[in-house]
Length: 234
Image (cartoon, rainbow, N blue to C red; front, side, top):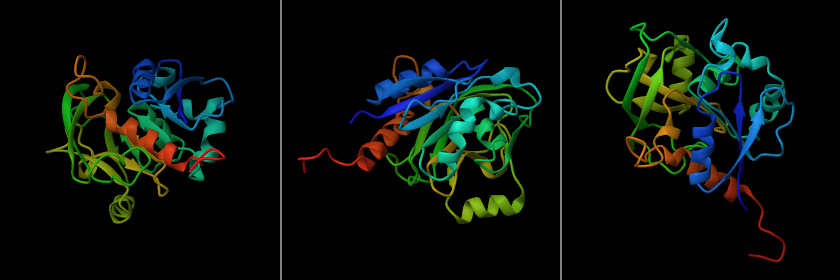
């Protein structure tokens, strides 16, 4: 079975094609999803890509959460049925939709950051990180103006206690994120929000590494393992 991964395009999305390319390189079929359509097209997973959805008016992701496609995505994602990866602006949308706790605010420096960034994978138990090893360091791209993750102390403690911190910045978080958090998951492990961009680190020709590919091959492995074998096999 070939996994079908939907990539949502909002007005202002700019990394949707990069995400689709990463999906294809990982061996899955990317499926274009439009923000205004209330139809997930039967996909096995969804990626909310980076960019500036709806121009980042009000707050980053605040308008996108009300898009028709999100009304279809939220119930199966919240129940643990649908794997969802939110990258950068997609992470902001997941927080605004209350699928993940906390919020993303202006970088502590108040400047846009664009750099190659080392991350440490803290949790390999999610749908999007199962092809990594806990503690593995990877090199991907960080590019954001509002990537400073914040949450109440009790929320941060719960994320730590339950193993839901997916990735941390190696060294001090360049954007000021609390506890150096770069990515988190929900309690089911099917939803992951990540501020850096793994889709920009899937080819040696164009990225700082190919370390980001593991997020996409992890999803392919999860979907394949979860799919029943065809009748008459096994």
